Length: 242
Image 1 (cartoon, rainbow, N blue to C red):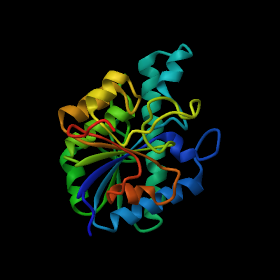
Image 2 (image 1 turned 60 degrees about the horizontal axis):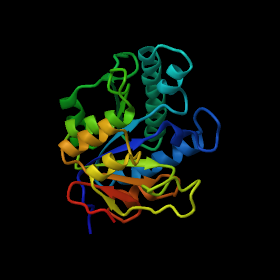
Image 3 (image 1 turned 90 degrees about the horizontal axis):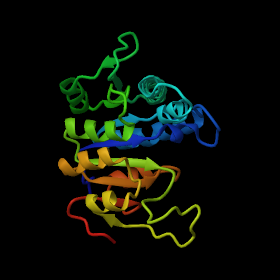
Image 4 (image 1 turned 135 degrees about the vertical axis):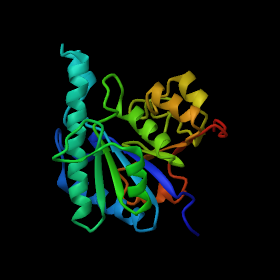
C-alpha cells in the first residue's frame, strides 16, 4: 500500500538538530534525520522542510533580554539558514538532491524563495528546505511552515517535536496528562494547547491543511507519520476531539 500523501511539508525545530547538546548542532542527529528524509524522498513523495533556529538563537528570547524584537527575529532568521545548509549538506552526502531557498536574500549561499521554483524542484524529486523564516519579524517558524505549506499546496503539515503528540497538560509535570488522538483547529485555539502558535493554526484552518504532531526522537517516525501510521496527534477540520 502506497503513502496517502504526494506532497508534504515537514517542520523541524532547531532544538531537534542539537540532540542532547545544550547548544548548536549534533552532526550525528542531523545525519539520522537526513537518512529518514532520504527514505521518504526515495518513495517518490514530494517533501519540503522548514527549519527553526532554537538551537542557535531564538528571537523571542533575545527580545526578552532587551534586544529590539525585529532585530532579534532577523538574527533568528539568519540562524535558520545555518540549520538549513547543515541539513542540505547531510542530505547531499547521501545523494539526495536538495535545494535551500531563503526568504532573506543570500545569493552566494542559497536560492531566493520563489514559490513556482520551489514547486518545480519538488516535482523533479528534490527536497526543498526553506530557511530565513517568512522574511518578516514577529512571525514564528511555525507560521512560516503553515504559510509555505499553503503556498506549495502541501496536503499535510508534519510537526516533529520532542513529545509524542498533543496533551491536555504538560506530560513532563503531570503524569495524568492525556494525549489526544485527534483535535479540531478550533479546540486547539480555544484551549491554547500550544501545538503551534495561533497564527499558524489559523492559517492551516483557513486553508484546510491537517497538522500531524509526532515524536522525532523515535527513529523511523518521519517515515511512519508520512505513511499514515497513527503515532501522534492529528489536527484537522473534520477531526473530532478524542
